[in-house]
Length: 258
Figure (cartoon, rainbow, N blue to C red):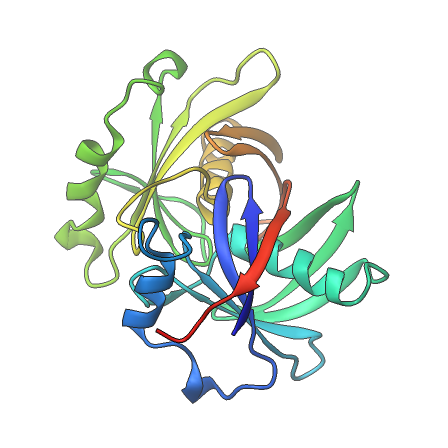
């Protein structure tokens, strides 16, 4: 089975062309976990299945976390759009695609992929932080910029990720600098459920952070610096956001039968 490795600002994925396969034939959880294992497998933050388009869409996207659970992934959507565009010989600069949370659009803007994400509702204040659903569940906490680099994110985030208030789905935990750096970028770090650890960036979490920053102090365009790279968010109205940033395709290969 052939695969392509995709890197979206440090969020890395194993991408499979599943357009000729049925949904019932998708990889089982143990298989996904094995592929994503960074010591014994290929290593990734998840698996992207590029599926056939339907109902006016150019393609479909199924994202599987390393534990095999299905979710929406903003950086995964950008990566899938980039790969699909390469399969079209780079001649198509816009697309519509289905993901688990509905129909999305992608555009090629200033040599980077940009996709739209759906915000279910404005940020909700909770005793734990600001809750935002940007395709999947996120909890956003603000912090002084100087405190982010040395933060023990796993110790902070793990109890929140499993808190009864967010059961049964759980929640991703994002910590964002409450002030930008000299370049105008807000530092951000994310603990992702399904991965059960910190990832180098998170697209839907970055959109959630942008929604909270707008909620707290206004504005509609925000720049972010994650450990894996830079991302940008432009908020359009109350329920739509555009996420942009780099995507690379460092290598491809073949998964051999075990």
